[in-house]
Length: 202
Image (cartoon, rainbow, N blue to C red):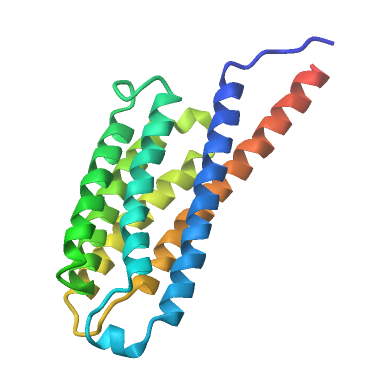
């Protein structure tokens, strides 16, 4: 019986670990956002006042995305070798600052900023997924990126509406992101187990 070495197996393990981390953080963010959204007093919403905890979460979301993209790029050969992640990290950093500024202008401005970011980040994630296609499970990342761009368009449209948006409006977007990261992580693990079984048989 011969053990066959697959150079791509280390990448699969690294990506699955990374995707689990992204899924876990996103799920935690969603739980916090839903809790804060449900607890937000109607009077605060009527006066366009964002609670400090909700404001912090809104800034933290793109800030974490920036950090995560840097982590991913550095583990994959560096920022110079991963242009889409580098651009995503830069864009998310700018957006974190933009969200902090938009908070002073009201929820509509915040949602509009998130909309622009979701479109840009989604397209960059789609590009990363296509570039990494051979690593496996990238169909979920590509689909997530495309859906993010669509969600961003809807955010912008809703930001122009009369109804007052809140942090809970962004929670479904983050939840879908967590779902796709989880799917990718599990898919990679299943694929790795199958390859391992095939190698042992060979």
